[in-house]
View 1 (cartoon, rainbow, N blue to C red):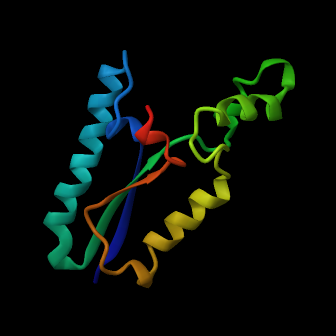
View 2 (view 1 turned 60 degrees about the horizontal axis):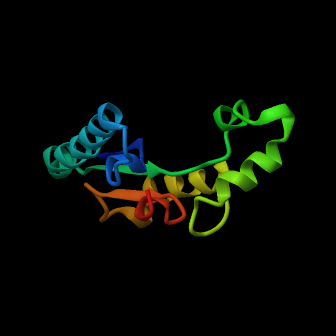
Length: 122
């Protein structure tokens, strides 16, 4: 009866960084898989998209903060992002909620950058 699949990868699949060849290839393959699955399952009303993450506040990033200065760590990371900040996890959740909603019923086979413009500068 249909459904939605949302894959998640990182923006490096579209905008590879130097010295990141193995992970860049696997992330690009994930984006290609999304497009292939979208073409395969569109006739069954199954929509498949991927979100390419940039920097999102998370426990993984928090573990990298030095001496518990989490806000300072996020300020440093934000300097790399054109919009000047690190995304909130709730913003990512909002994008996922949109992609699985009826309002996104004509969107399939795409990869959406969720990166504050980072993918254009990597």
